[in-house]
Image (tube, rainbow, N blue to C red):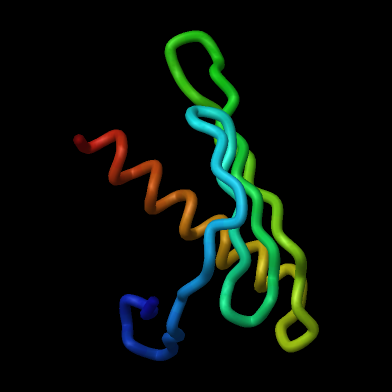
Length: 81
């Protein structure tokens, strides 16, 4: 993953640990952090709730912002298709 301006980037890889069709995806990324994504049907749409373990290198607000940016980009992609 890379910042649009090329100022920073990192490899993003992991292993899926649990998949519940149309309900949830859980995975562990390469540095051992666990992530869970829940899909909750709401009317005509779906609410996505992402939970993750924080790491000790970057401030928590920065981590939250990074994960939120990923979700925002995913939302733009889905809504444009």
